[in-house]
Length: 596
Image (cartoon, rainbow, N blue to C red):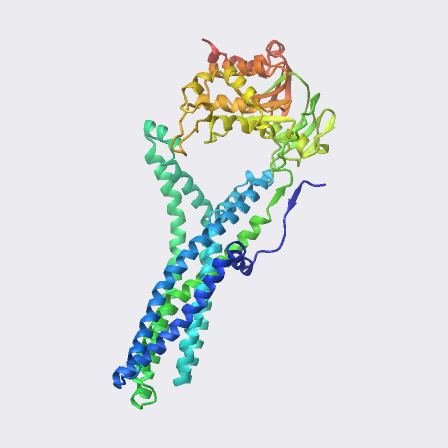
């Protein structure tokens, strides 16, 4: 069965998105909906009460005047208070939406086929969806409610206009239609522009982050390249903003031109009420209150209506990104935990394996073949780009779209279950993570199945990797938070982080340990010393060492030299040096690094 799937599922629609708040915060959402309806009704009620109040004052009708004034004050008070009440409910709804949707997005990303992790288009899509989905779901819900309020208000005004001057009501209703289409078209153009600039936006965010991220501060200050990074940020930011501004400018001109026409049209309708007013067909109270209502309508049609339609259209375009995101191919085994049963390892073999990365034409591995036995340390060496790391990506199952066969214990790795394969190896990559949690947790993450029962082994490894002095110096020992996320967090050196990452790999019970240039940031001598310590601690394991620096390869039982996606030489350090081939040439060019 194919372990990669496209989770089609039901297509996300605007209605699907609108229902989400009712799923996660049903009581608050229902109350907010009721408040929305009341807000619309109270607007019409305010016009009616204002009309009655003005007529009573003008005509000096003292009967029930106090009651009308009280009702007028209550209506205004409710309109003021309702917004504050609604905002309280919105806070709760936002929290619940964010909690649930962010969890779904993170789970989706964690299940993605590895191909998407290394694909720029996929990350552009993720950069649009991840930070904006919760916001857009909440935005859609509130805009729909706001639109409902506006419709109720407009309908109420239209009914009052119809009751006095029917033809004016028809003209107002007809005016809304072309304005809506104009706004919708402009909003589509806006979102297309956002898609076009998403790559530049993501790059601008990256360089912007470099200006204030703690890890980059030291080098930025010491080397003085702040202006260079700022120029990079400004370049990509300006490119994005130039496209955005151009699109927004065109949209603004069109929308406001339509609003000006609408305003002139509605004002002319108000003047049309003068004749029935002078003829006594309508009262002065109705004329004043309906004029205020129509001026309010002008403002709402100029800004709110265009904003609502603009938002709906934008979210409708965003919805397409949501569907594309949730239909990205997933790896069914991405979240499978390693088997608790420790497997035995006898051999690893590649037979005529060819592989090229998706979307490329060059074979990174071009018919590579080799076999290595268990309980040995094997090193893969070669220039950058020769295919060393790709071997590990295929062996660990990150990619399976290769030709040829990869075997563990003479069995095709595609025949293993995910938990069996995950239990087979522990990998330490060059770009190891610095988890800002406790030192103890940093290490125990390496063996998640035995997280609570590894204390003795943890302490043995801390001693073996010469980190006991560090632990003793920390305020809370192994329970000290590392990094600066928490107030009591402590920074440690890069070398100490590196040793922690190695302990994390060592505490894992997998029989195969893989080190993919994890010491590349160390000087060559420190690298050799660290590998010697690692070798001492992994005598009962099989180890694969990936490196383009050869000082540590002398420790290996067998060395494979990779060039252009093939094994071109193999043997021990002594054998390869005696051959005088590529390995000997590479080693001799580097041996000066290791002279003490």
